[in-house]
Image 1: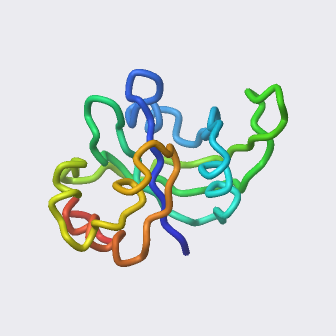
Image 2: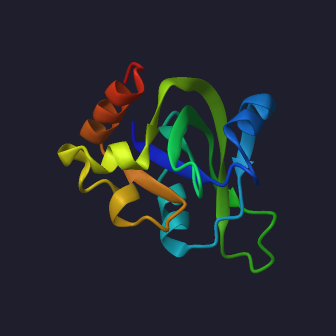
Length: 137
């Protein structure tokens, strides 16, 4: 299993929207590296749901339920999407500031490649963030 972080502006698509919908496609990604990250996803992979912009906080956990396929919102046909299912909220939201204060997370892609909307999370990084969020890895 691999781990990921999905960033979304809460005004456009929030954790509450994801929970209400249950399973939804993660569309609108227009960055090649983020799209390649989604191409690497497999059914069952887990990801953190991150509110970007003002909040900059991990608020929930999702699971990949459909692998990469063409994004219906992309007229060029170059980009794809995956479907994710809301699993559960974190008990303690984890902020970007908290992540940056944790030395073991200094190489986390969220910190190093902050503009990407979909980034990988290493197995050890996943465990540390789960501890910070007071959830089981």
